[in-house]
Length: 164
Image (cartoon, rainbow, N blue to C red; front, side, top):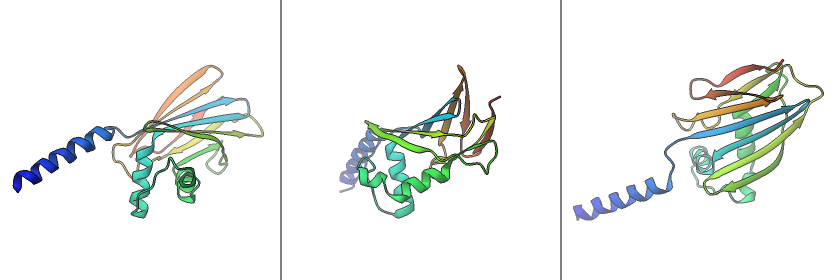
């Protein structure tokens, strides 16, 4: 009987390792062209599903459109990723263009049109850092052919980017 449980444990461990990914990372790309800001967010969809389970105690499949329209997903994203023009108080409201999936990854594309080109951006990026202690959020912003990267994690959630 003991061998049976050991075998089941090994099979479960092998299966779990095969279908999960070993790192928790997101990549956010910000492209600034004048007063237009485009945002592209790449993450693992199962990390979001784990977060949902953490908060609600039930499983969800985010690849189903009705689950992406749930207020939890939009509220969580809005609370964990904040981009403001100039100061913390001038939050930019992004409009979602598309959300698509590729195997294990999820990509969100968004945009915002500002009244004028910003001088600086306040960025708060805590995507999934409350769920995974090893979560790393990489942010790359580009403007006028120049790119810069910032790394956010459990300890670092915010930064200010000077654009001019």
